[in-house]
Image 1 (tube, rainbow, N blue to C red):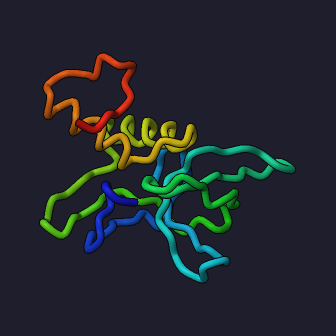
Image 2: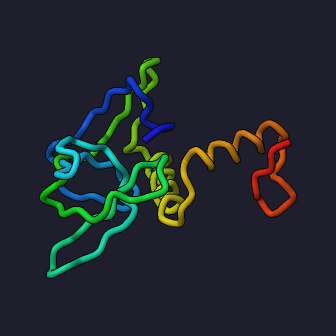
Length: 137
């Protein structure tokens, strides 16, 4: 989930979650990996009146597949980075950014590509004039 959740970060999780939405970071049990995983919801659908969630890490190009609500064990509310910086995922700005990252993931753009684009724009103090593609100097 880098760059949002970096190695060494701690998570504050709402274990009594009731609703999960597009862009939320959830903790679910992966039967394939036999482990708890924190990934972002990038889609949902209904099958036989049951809601299914499509989840994916921010820094990968493939999703984890569809999971049921029964596999979700919690919803990440706060990220505490190793440098003690606190990121509250419940504030409006971060909820909007979460939805934006989910949309980018859904169309195949990783968060590291977004980060690189933003860094290049800040470095040059402008948006590239060549259609937004990232070009190395």
